[in-house]
Length: 153
Picture 1 (cartoon, rainbow, N blue to C red):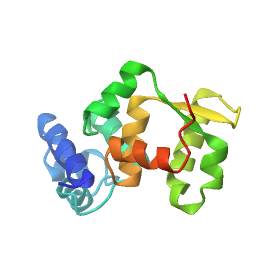
Picture 2: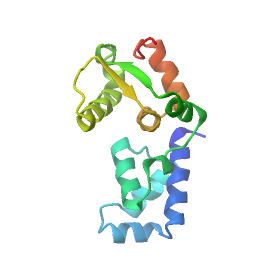
Picture 3: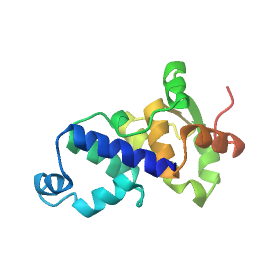
Picture 4: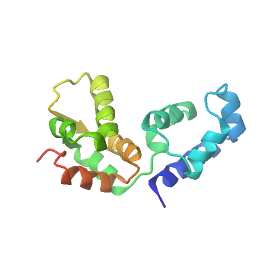
């Protein structure tokens, strides 16, 4: 099962737990969330951006962690504190990491952290980044490590 499909299953579960049909979501959101689009996210036919995923979690009034598949790596990351990204390496890595870079910039804005050298990524942020990269948190960490983007301990 792809990561997009796992996210889709979580979205469907949360929507169902809220007692909403796809049409209810469209009606209650006053058309902001189209039933056909939500359905395609839920089936894993269409990738959802991290921003839209977080907005949808907010619409459903659930924490973002409820719509992101949980796995051991994300929990371990939360338990152990975080992973540290080398932002200079991330910048020099180029286009393949453009989505990761943009998400990191949004974290910096939220935190008011502008040192531009390193950034601590928490478990929930790691899961969101994995959604952006359409992979699992474990696979993303390994890819970032190979690219030299995870700062050495």
